[in-house]
Image 1 (cartoon, helix red, strand yellow):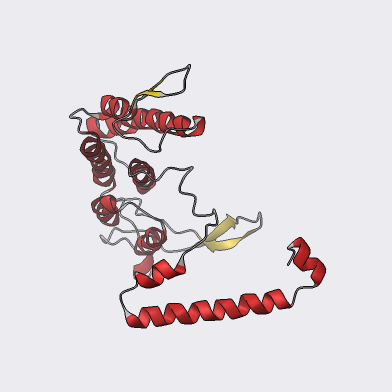
Image 2 (spheres, rainbow, N blue to C red):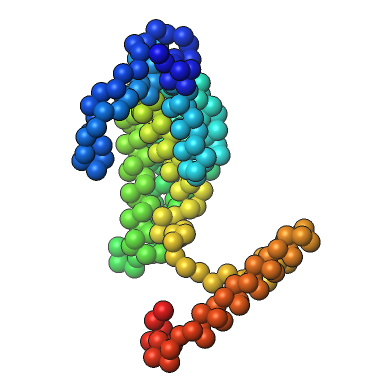
Length: 248
């Protein structure tokens, strides 16, 4: 007997839950429940799948302009969600470029630029620049994203616009994630310039001065004092050889 968590939200009739032989990620086998992620009859997300999906998007840095598309996914309106994502992307490019084009032509004109091959100077500045285009890597990124957008509009976007796809959750979610990737880039978050994994020096004095609440400033000062004591203790515990080499 299926619990509500593993039952269709629209009440579709499904077979009872039964354990089947499954292969796990580590290559081992065992008997476990093989549940439907979405209803095979009406296509709606199962409650447990919806819960997992919402948990994923709580962690994933989805662009805020795609909130309406996400709501449609949660309602199991997958084709509408994908279309909403395409419209959001196209409108974003129109607004940033000032162009009144569509799809393939819009992406081509908005991100294209020209370089003087002899001097390396930019002869034609793009309407939307993902980065400052100073290095070859910067220009490759700009061109690469332009080609990706051209293909994205020419392929998936046109298919969804002119056909009834009958899209399932996987395709719709993939479209939304890819559109989010493009939107962040178009907002100037270059792949090469915004790597959060690159360590940088933080000016905590500036952060302290920009923290309006007194209680938050007190907490920050307390954390920094603890951190200073920890680093000092750690430094004192190093041997002379370790201090010279920088080894920990």
